[in-house]
Length: 288
Image (cartoon, rainbow, N blue to C red; front, side, top):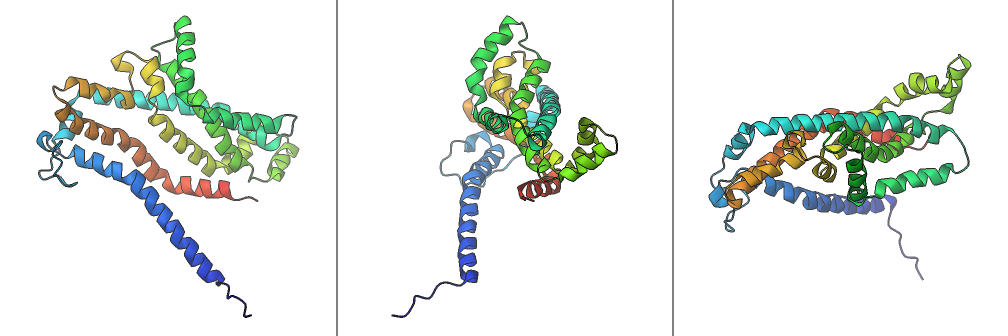
């Protein structure tokens, strides 16, 4: 019997590429369609919000929703609060995560693998799970309604994520660099800050940008821990726009416009830092 002809390597790669493109298209459709509708809602007049016959392109597009949102003086306050909370959280997370990632990458100690798995397990816990006991603890300590404390909570939630990301980059840096620095008189901590961190700069940039994106969309923590309207970040503050409107029909377009404005800073940050993020992620994925 004649042997069945096996597909060539080139044909197998072509089939794999086709499957990948279909997967990418599915992901793009899943995440992109809601964004398209948000943009469409933000450009609609109130009379078109509930018109089911309206196409995805508004019949009478308008930027009036954006103008109304920008005229609200609270929006600027919400954006500034978001920058404060994200800045505090990202800095605190990096200060704690960088040495921890270096220790897990370079030091060998009993229970190290279990500790690393524990850090990953912490990352999988939703903030909502811990908010009730955390709220009671902070209430007993009279630390509610504090942007600094809320920012520190941001940092604690971001730290496991940053540890894993930074460890992947530090693993790719040869240990010889550390040893050479210590032979020249540096302590291990000095070798880390003066040698390893500069070399891992693309990875550090990637970790910081990703942490900022994650923290910017945080909702549960500030919603529960902050009560004063003047302290709220943009993710929570835009909800007040709905309560200020007389009808849901008019508020949906404003919420859509406010949502797009809230996304604009982190989107711009990612576009500016995209090259560094991609470079860092690619380096972190390569096993030396």
